[in-house]
Length: 250
Image (tube, rainbow, N blue to C red):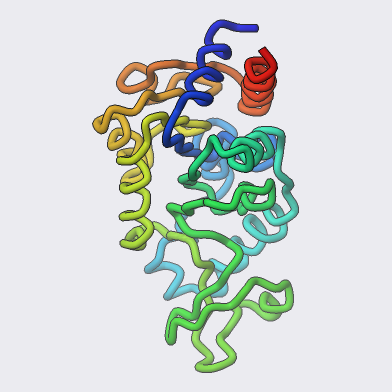
């Protein structure tokens, strides 16, 4: 077994407060492309449809793209072994929480219970006029744009759009979890999206060891990462689980 995998497993086993921070890269193996990069969504779509001002002024045009990408496409995706490995680590008492930038619900589908959704989620819709919350159902999207049954306002997915602030309670909870961590695992994020990109630095500044799993180096690798595991998240996470079990037996 790779020495770095052995070390990661040892750190997880001996940690007191282990937190994970995930980005789009963990979901790539579930068939969800990243937003940025050569094959990212923004190379195929103009992201203007997720601008809050544009949405309010062009709700039908925005919703046509939102439905196509986030519900017809992303909604059919399933967790991959990396998601399941994190759920196992939580169920066995090692992992205390996940802070995710993803809105795809795959951590919950994979079995994780304590998930902080930094950018919100696609499971619920919120009325842009009266604030009523709706659990997503296919019939809500027929016709488009979906409207509130109480005030007829346009419904918006309950995730963060461009020019929309992070919910204060989510931001505060992410900071508190990061401050408590003595071990912090970063998976599948380049560290380029503000303000989410600053959250792992809080863990580091409070003394946490940082493990990073990424296909390529990120903005964290040479600045705060203590242990860099390069490769696919699913393969590396399964190797870490195997090593933890081996160390238990040993």
